[in-house]
Image 1: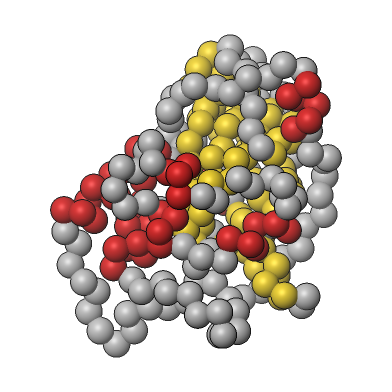
Image 2: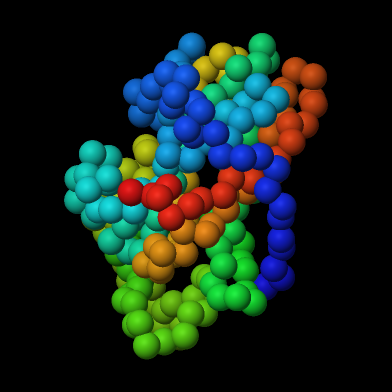
Length: 226
Protein backbone atom coordinates (compact mmCIF):
# COMPACT_ATOMS: atom_id res chain seq x y z
CA UNK A 1 0.00 0.00 0.00
CA UNK A 2 1.33 3.41 -0.93
CA UNK A 3 2.32 5.50 2.04
CA UNK A 4 1.13 9.10 2.04
CA UNK A 5 2.78 11.74 4.20
CA UNK A 6 1.18 14.94 5.46
CA UNK A 7 2.58 17.98 7.25
CA UNK A 8 0.61 19.26 10.23
CA UNK A 9 -1.07 22.62 9.67
CA UNK A 10 -2.10 23.67 13.13
CA UNK A 11 -1.07 23.33 16.77
CA UNK A 12 -3.34 21.40 19.09
CA UNK A 13 -5.65 23.87 20.80
CA UNK A 14 -7.14 21.74 23.55
CA UNK A 15 -5.54 23.66 26.42
CA UNK A 16 -6.59 26.99 24.98
CA UNK A 17 -10.18 25.92 24.47
CA UNK A 18 -10.51 24.37 27.89
CA UNK A 19 -9.03 27.50 29.50
CA UNK A 20 -11.57 29.55 27.57
CA UNK A 21 -14.42 27.71 29.23
CA UNK A 22 -15.49 25.32 26.50
CA UNK A 23 -17.72 22.55 27.85
CA UNK A 24 -18.61 19.15 26.43
CA UNK A 25 -21.62 18.86 24.14
CA UNK A 26 -24.24 16.50 25.45
CA UNK A 27 -25.64 15.30 22.13
CA UNK A 28 -25.64 11.61 21.25
CA UNK A 29 -25.38 11.75 17.48
CA UNK A 30 -27.29 15.02 17.30
CA UNK A 31 -26.64 18.56 16.19
CA UNK A 32 -27.07 21.08 18.99
CA UNK A 33 -27.39 24.73 17.91
CA UNK A 34 -25.19 27.08 19.89
CA UNK A 35 -23.52 24.30 21.92
CA UNK A 36 -19.80 24.69 22.67
CA UNK A 37 -17.57 21.64 22.80
CA UNK A 38 -14.48 20.08 24.31
CA UNK A 39 -12.48 16.97 23.36
CA UNK A 40 -9.11 15.50 24.20
CA UNK A 41 -7.54 16.81 20.98
CA UNK A 42 -8.84 19.89 19.17
CA UNK A 43 -7.99 21.87 16.04
CA UNK A 44 -9.79 24.88 14.63
CA UNK A 45 -9.71 27.10 11.54
CA UNK A 46 -12.05 28.86 9.10
CA UNK A 47 -14.99 28.70 11.50
CA UNK A 48 -14.79 24.92 11.96
CA UNK A 49 -13.55 23.17 15.11
CA UNK A 50 -12.90 19.43 15.23
CA UNK A 51 -12.37 17.68 18.55
CA UNK A 52 -11.29 14.04 18.80
CA UNK A 53 -11.45 11.82 21.88
CA UNK A 54 -9.93 8.33 21.38
CA UNK A 55 -11.81 5.65 23.31
CA UNK A 56 -8.96 3.42 24.45
CA UNK A 57 -10.48 1.68 27.47
CA UNK A 58 -13.38 -0.76 27.64
CA UNK A 59 -15.26 1.44 30.13
CA UNK A 60 -15.70 4.19 27.53
CA UNK A 61 -17.95 1.94 25.43
CA UNK A 62 -20.40 0.78 28.12
CA UNK A 63 -22.96 3.53 27.61
CA UNK A 64 -23.47 2.97 23.90
CA UNK A 65 -22.55 -0.74 23.72
CA UNK A 66 -24.18 -2.69 26.60
CA UNK A 67 -22.96 -6.07 25.26
CA UNK A 68 -20.18 -6.57 22.72
CA UNK A 69 -18.28 -3.47 21.61
CA UNK A 70 -15.64 -2.53 19.01
CA UNK A 71 -12.84 -2.42 21.59
CA UNK A 72 -13.10 -6.16 22.26
CA UNK A 73 -12.29 -6.78 18.60
CA UNK A 74 -9.19 -4.58 18.56
CA UNK A 75 -11.05 -1.63 16.99
CA UNK A 76 -10.72 1.91 18.30
CA UNK A 77 -13.62 4.35 18.22
CA UNK A 78 -12.66 7.99 17.82
CA UNK A 79 -15.32 10.31 19.20
CA UNK A 80 -15.61 13.31 16.88
CA UNK A 81 -17.14 16.64 17.91
CA UNK A 82 -17.46 18.96 14.92
CA UNK A 83 -18.45 22.57 15.57
CA UNK A 84 -19.59 24.80 12.69
CA UNK A 85 -19.48 28.51 13.55
CA UNK A 86 -20.16 29.61 9.98
CA UNK A 87 -23.43 31.11 8.77
CA UNK A 88 -23.90 28.31 6.23
CA UNK A 89 -23.93 24.51 6.53
CA UNK A 90 -20.73 22.52 6.11
CA UNK A 91 -20.52 19.20 4.25
CA UNK A 92 -18.03 16.58 5.44
CA UNK A 93 -17.02 13.59 3.32
CA UNK A 94 -16.83 11.01 6.11
CA UNK A 95 -15.43 8.32 3.81
CA UNK A 96 -12.24 10.30 3.27
CA UNK A 97 -11.29 10.59 6.94
CA UNK A 98 -8.02 8.73 7.57
CA UNK A 99 -6.10 7.55 10.63
CA UNK A 100 -2.36 7.76 9.88
CA UNK A 101 -0.26 5.34 11.94
CA UNK A 102 3.45 4.56 12.01
CA UNK A 103 4.06 0.81 12.24
CA UNK A 104 7.83 1.20 12.47
CA UNK A 105 10.56 3.69 11.49
CA UNK A 106 10.09 3.07 7.77
CA UNK A 107 6.44 2.12 7.50
CA UNK A 108 3.54 4.54 7.76
CA UNK A 109 0.03 3.63 6.75
CA UNK A 110 -3.39 5.16 6.23
CA UNK A 111 -6.35 3.38 7.81
CA UNK A 112 -9.79 3.90 6.34
CA UNK A 113 -12.87 4.27 8.55
CA UNK A 114 -14.98 1.17 9.05
CA UNK A 115 -18.67 0.84 8.44
CA UNK A 116 -21.01 -0.69 11.03
CA UNK A 117 -21.21 -3.99 9.12
CA UNK A 118 -17.43 -4.29 9.06
CA UNK A 119 -17.13 -3.57 12.78
CA UNK A 120 -19.66 -6.28 13.63
CA UNK A 121 -17.88 -8.74 11.33
CA UNK A 122 -14.50 -8.12 12.95
CA UNK A 123 -15.77 -8.30 16.53
CA UNK A 124 -18.05 -11.32 16.19
CA UNK A 125 -17.02 -13.28 13.12
CA UNK A 126 -13.25 -12.91 12.75
CA UNK A 127 -10.36 -14.06 14.88
CA UNK A 128 -8.20 -11.06 15.83
CA UNK A 129 -6.15 -12.54 18.61
CA UNK A 130 -2.90 -10.64 19.06
CA UNK A 131 0.40 -12.53 19.01
CA UNK A 132 3.17 -10.28 20.42
CA UNK A 133 5.85 -12.51 18.86
CA UNK A 134 4.67 -11.78 15.35
CA UNK A 135 5.99 -8.90 13.27
CA UNK A 136 3.47 -6.15 12.68
CA UNK A 137 1.91 -6.41 9.27
CA UNK A 138 0.14 -3.74 7.22
CA UNK A 139 -3.55 -3.24 7.86
CA UNK A 140 -6.01 -4.68 7.17
CA UNK A 141 -5.07 -8.35 7.41
CA UNK A 142 -7.32 -10.69 5.38
CA UNK A 143 -9.29 -13.20 7.42
CA UNK A 144 -11.43 -16.25 6.65
CA UNK A 145 -9.44 -16.90 3.49
CA UNK A 146 -10.58 -20.07 1.73
CA UNK A 147 -13.63 -20.63 3.89
CA UNK A 148 -17.17 -19.34 4.32
CA UNK A 149 -17.90 -16.45 6.67
CA UNK A 150 -19.88 -17.45 9.77
CA UNK A 151 -23.53 -16.51 9.81
CA UNK A 152 -24.67 -13.09 10.96
CA UNK A 153 -27.06 -13.68 13.84
CA UNK A 154 -29.07 -11.60 16.31
CA UNK A 155 -25.95 -10.61 18.24
CA UNK A 156 -24.36 -9.40 15.02
CA UNK A 157 -27.43 -7.31 14.18
CA UNK A 158 -27.49 -5.75 17.65
CA UNK A 159 -23.84 -4.75 17.44
CA UNK A 160 -24.22 -3.44 13.89
CA UNK A 161 -27.18 -1.30 14.96
CA UNK A 162 -25.32 0.01 18.02
CA UNK A 163 -22.38 1.02 15.82
CA UNK A 164 -24.66 2.82 13.40
CA UNK A 165 -26.50 4.65 16.18
CA UNK A 166 -23.25 5.85 17.76
CA UNK A 167 -21.56 6.91 14.50
CA UNK A 168 -21.44 10.42 13.04
CA UNK A 169 -25.08 10.81 12.02
CA UNK A 170 -24.83 13.03 8.95
CA UNK A 171 -22.41 14.45 6.39
CA UNK A 172 -23.87 17.93 7.04
CA UNK A 173 -23.16 20.17 10.04
CA UNK A 174 -25.76 22.89 10.38
CA UNK A 175 -24.74 26.54 10.95
CA UNK A 176 -23.72 27.40 14.52
CA UNK A 177 -24.16 23.84 15.78
CA UNK A 178 -22.13 20.88 16.96
CA UNK A 179 -22.36 17.32 15.63
CA UNK A 180 -20.99 14.36 17.56
CA UNK A 181 -20.42 10.70 16.77
CA UNK A 182 -17.93 7.85 16.49
CA UNK A 183 -15.59 6.88 13.66
CA UNK A 184 -14.13 3.36 13.81
CA UNK A 185 -10.66 2.10 12.82
CA UNK A 186 -9.25 -1.43 13.01
CA UNK A 187 -6.00 -1.34 14.97
CA UNK A 188 -6.02 -5.11 15.67
CA UNK A 189 -5.53 -4.28 19.32
CA UNK A 190 -2.37 -2.24 18.68
CA UNK A 191 -3.73 0.76 20.58
CA UNK A 192 -0.24 2.04 21.36
CA UNK A 193 -0.06 3.12 17.71
CA UNK A 194 -2.31 6.05 18.63
CA UNK A 195 0.50 7.71 20.58
CA UNK A 196 2.07 9.05 17.38
CA UNK A 197 -0.94 8.85 15.07
CA UNK A 198 -2.63 11.61 13.08
CA UNK A 199 -6.23 12.03 12.00
CA UNK A 200 -6.56 13.54 8.53
CA UNK A 201 -9.85 15.20 7.52
CA UNK A 202 -9.38 16.46 3.96
CA UNK A 203 -12.81 17.04 2.43
CA UNK A 204 -14.96 19.81 3.92
CA UNK A 205 -16.99 22.33 1.94
CA UNK A 206 -19.27 25.27 2.59
CA UNK A 207 -22.52 24.13 1.01
CA UNK A 208 -23.93 27.51 -0.04
CA UNK A 209 -20.84 29.08 -1.57
CA UNK A 210 -19.15 25.76 -2.53
CA UNK A 211 -15.89 26.97 -1.00
CA UNK A 212 -13.49 24.30 0.23
CA UNK A 213 -12.19 24.41 3.80
CA UNK A 214 -8.52 23.63 4.38
CA UNK A 215 -7.82 20.11 5.55
CA UNK A 216 -7.37 19.17 9.20
CA UNK A 217 -4.30 17.19 10.26
CA UNK A 218 -4.65 16.51 13.98
CA UNK A 219 -1.76 14.84 15.78
CA UNK A 220 -2.08 12.69 18.87
CA UNK A 221 0.29 12.69 21.83
CA UNK A 222 0.96 10.16 24.55
CA UNK A 223 -1.38 11.87 26.97
CA UNK A 224 -4.21 12.43 24.46
CA UNK A 225 -5.90 9.05 24.92
CA UNK A 226 -7.58 7.74 28.01
